[in-house]
Length: 316
Image (tube, rainbow, N blue to C red; front, side, top):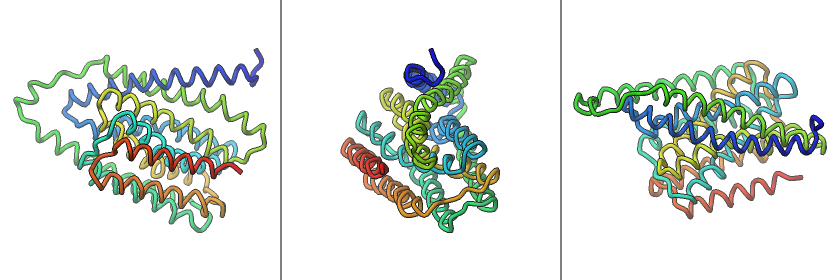
C-alpha cells in the first residue's frame, strides 16, 4: 500500500470518523459523570472542559499550518470551523432533538462569543492581525476564564451539606474516559484531515480555501461528534455549551496564540465574504436563541440551509 494513495486516504478518513465517534462518547460520558460528582452544571462543563478539548484540533492545525505553510491555513480553519459549528453542528443537533439554551450560557457565555467574532473582524479589517492583537485576544480569554471560574465557585458554594453527601464520588474511570476521549478526538481529526487535505492540494486549491473547507470541517468534527452524542443522550446543554465555548476558544486562544507566533495576513476576499459570513451566522444564532431560549428543529433546518448556502458560495 503506497503512502498517499487513494486507498490510504480512504482508510484514514474511515478511521478518523470511527475515532471521532468513540472519542465523543467517552468525553461526554466521562465529563458528565465528573460534573455530577463535583456539582457542576452540564452547561458549564460543555463551555469549558468539552469546548476546550474539542478546540485542540483547531489549535494543532492552525499552529502547524502557520509555521510550516502559511497563516492562511490557520485563519481559514478558524473562520470555517466557527461557521460550521453554528450552521452544521448546532443545526444537525437541533434536528435530532430541540436544544434548550440555559440562562447561564445565554447571559454569560454568548456575549463573549459575540465579542470574539466582532474582535476578529475589527482587528483583521486592516489586513493584518499582529502580535499586539494576539495579546489583546489572549487578554479577553483571561477575562472569560475569570467569569467562568467565578461561576464555578458560586455553584460550589451553593451546594448544601445534604446535597454534597448525595453526590457520587469522582472515579478514575471517569477521568480516564475524558482523557481517552480527548486523545481519540485529536487523533481522529488528524487522520480525517490527512485523508482529505492532500486531495485538494493536488487539485491546486489555495491555502485559505483548504482551511475553510476540509480543515474547517475536519476540525469541527469533534464538536459535531460530541454535540450529536450529547443530543442523542438527552444532554442538550452540552451541545450548546460546546459550540459556544469552542467558538470563543477558537478565536481568543487559537488565533491569539497563532498571531503571537506569526502575524496573520488577511486578504481582501476574506474581509468581503468570510468576515461578514461569520458575523451573520453569529447574529442569526443569537437571534434564534433569544426568541425562545431554545433551538427548535425548524431553527436547526434554518442553520443547516444557511451553512449549505455558505459552502456553495465558497467554491470558485
